[in-house]
Length: 157
Length: 157
DNA sequence: AAATTATTGTAAGCATATTAACAGACCCAG
DNA sequence: CTGGGTCTGTTAATATGCTTACAATAATTT
Image 1 (cartoon, chains in turn blue, orange, green, purple):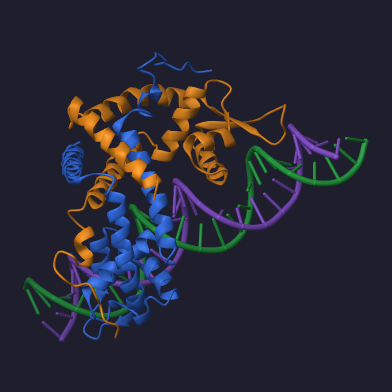
Image 2 (cartoon, helix red, strand yellow; image 1 turned 90 degrees about the vertical axis):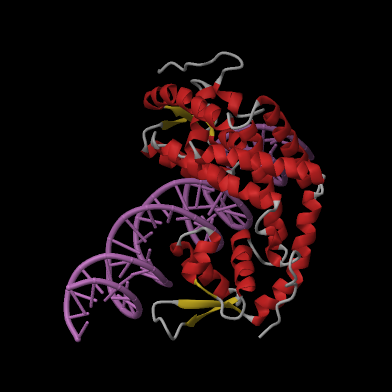
């Protein structure tokens, strides 16, 4: 049997499994995902689906190509294929062939999606507002600045 | 064509796609996932794999049942089945039948895994220390307290 | 002891992500 | 105007998560 090292109190391998900022951040993120997931589910949506829809909503009637959508959502084209398929199955988007470029589809919201978003967006804004009301204006600013500091540090690792 | 509402500046649907604390939090989390993913990959690991291994490392020679591991990792038993299969394929864990309960396997680290963890854990500690050095001691405390405040708010939604 | 309830690990089906490889269509250079 | 490089969307394989359902085994209740 191999010998497990680093067993001292306070320096043990579990010291980053609790009281650590990254651990707390992870647990907040998990909770956030759960809470948002339920919130979106009440409207038949998911986080990625909402993300796609809001970008398409803002893009207007011309819609977006799958590539454009991928860039905005920061995911690969390969993901978009499946996501759009699922949204199509929900009758929330349609893929229109672009007459000027036979490679691309312009993805557009259906009327059903626009109606959904028109009612969901205010609900979503309230939801976010309610969550963020846990922090006052000053705390929010401090929080954002600390996050940005951490992110800058991350990017230089 | 449906009509898109809420297009006013400052109240438009994109105001929570930037400058918002949750948006910044999400983008930090994304970066964190990328950075950690590369870090783990250098040792042939992933975040979930490391997570399982560190819990097993701390559990000692008796190992953990898949259920116990799931509880510690906060994921369902169904996930553990696949994760353990993949770790078994990497020769990092073995599943020993428990003589006193025919339902369960006790999952244990192989010598290979213990050697790997003995060399990885210090590297990992340094890595986390380096990332967190973006914030000084006071900032870390403030950061954690804000995260916890936010989480408490989240749990009451 | 027998019947009911609970727990364990697995499996199937889905959603979301990744990467790598591909065919088709475009564009620019010569 | 033809070739070579580039871009687009798709596909396949994999990793990770979820839920639901199931069979085997344990534990508890009666």
